[in-house]
Image 1 (cartoon, rainbow, N blue to C red):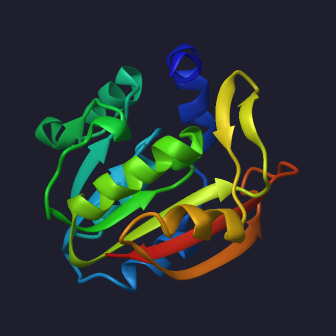
Image 2: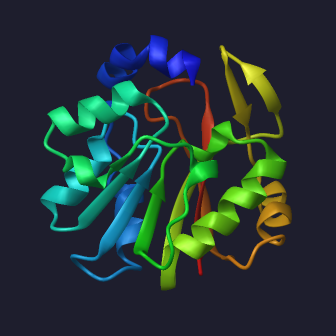
Length: 189
């Protein structure tokens, strides 16, 4: 969190124009139009704003106060912004969808099981989660942040400890033209 606090403006400027519409549409294909979505670890608020413009009831959660302030300045309802960590959320049956783009990758494998159980509790029946991770087996500190890279097998071993069900996964290249490869998951309650 210290990294994002110190580098929030740079991070916002670097990510605010990244086109995530293909990934977002994969999640939206599973959930009803105009339903309730949580943008979990929303960063620049790019996807929150898009979802809001599409008519979804958007909630935003991020532990970085600077990101929360930015989201409010961009027009996200301050009563829908939660300045907390995913580990501390306690929603119950509220969301049709949860969008966790490059956010759960900062949670270690043990805590990730607990967070996925909280996500399960937060989703309505037939709710869906989208999550993306850097592809690989690394887990530890890199570039002043903690990363939990993921493979399909590793994710399956984690998701098997929850009630969530894996629906689909796919890999892709990095949207910021870095050397990274990403793995994406859609899971259901």
